[in-house]
Image 1 (spheres, rainbow, N blue to C red):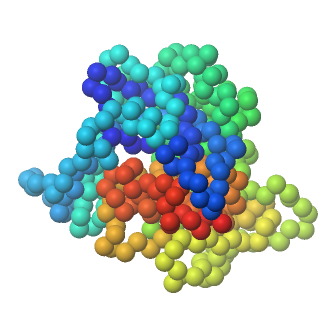
Image 2 (cartoon, rainbow, N blue to C red):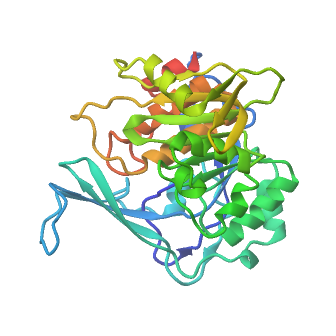
Length: 369
């Protein structure tokens, strides 16, 4: 989550927030749009940050002096407070811990109009949230009614307290594994779902390839139902664990299986699509081991250069859509294109939030059929 502006009189240290999957402003009477998922309350635990976005004609060289083409405080030029913006979108912020002093996290984001890339310079909040600030009563109330808990991997000591209580209550958890962080391994051991950045699987497992690293992750994390690695404009790869492991399963090497899926993919499609292997294969990686499951390959939407504005927050948008899809009971074959579509919509506007689609957005209509 990357809201726009923080009231300077308060410092948001970070804490759990309740993330409803549908705000009142997003509801529609259209019969094509389904009701919100019954299991639709997600508890988010992590950092809330202010983004200062500057668009430049081209990224500066060392010692250059340049002017920005445009400067924006996330998606809110009026500088509304962070809490007000979240509440306006239907997020329950009553469990957030607000410090009386210090500074909240913020990030300078330089958006390069030439290459359509973004460079982030992040300043963490200070002082950080510590577990003692999250009372047991507050945590218990936050988890009551939650169907899923999301962690961004930051503030691990506090996050681990939340994760352990969620595990005790048998509440599923999704971890955003962007990069190795202190305490992340403890969170991953409790994870039900993981969404990784492109480099994380190999960095974390030392496996020779991304595909074999996914095998290693499922072997090392026995609670994991699936892991997704996002590949930017190249789409994503998902390895889903099978709930039924039968003798005599066909065994296939993961690298060969991935190449087969790539060959079968419709490269001419401009919209996001997903193809999968047979269900309940025995998928192996040389020197690592094997798991029962299936491999899925997702293709990202092809965004015309004239429509591509800013990729800031694309990964966060993807994860947000995955959270929705899990609660809505979407199949992986629908979830992956849905998440890719949401992420692509966010890339068509400046900032992490201004381009996020409402449920009434025509681009999402095929997913409600």
